[in-house]
Length: 180
View 1 (cartoon, rainbow, N blue to C red):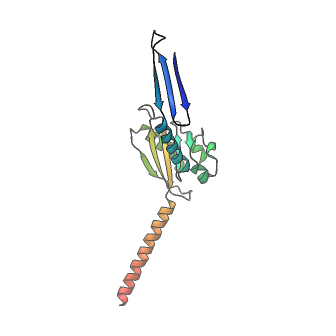
View 2: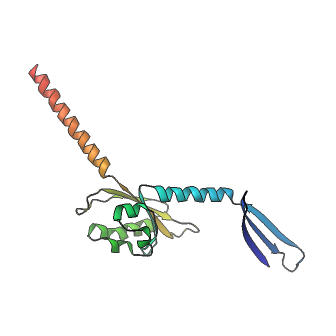
View 3: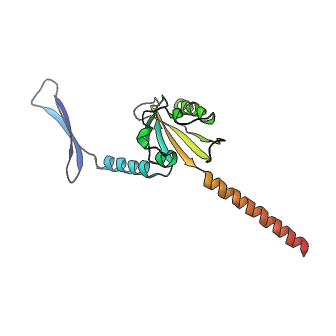
């Protein structure tokens, strides 16, 4: 007979397990596992996922969303639950986004490496940088892909404005040097 129970007390969450030794009912093995650090790590991971300004999703090998964070709602105007179980490319139109399944396939086929791409769609007013990382929670086989999308639009616009200001300053410096 085997039995495992999760006990959450006010002080410490623990997992208690017990099993009788084979052939002997009066002897057995038991353990108590302190889950404090695991619960803390799960809490911190959940906070990062839920509060990140970047779009974070977990996509299965079938290209269906398994999980998305609230940043998807801010970007696409649809609740996160709308995406779960749905085929990713079905949410967007356009040829640039039809390459997304190939990128996910590439991330699934890679061994331990990430794939980063800046997507430059003509029809999109933003410039996203997307990182695809293979997830292998229990084996060597990739079970899903972690996709993190960051909007670089403001950064690129600020860089362009700085470059223009530097060019204008260089022009003013040349003009004033020639005039003196």
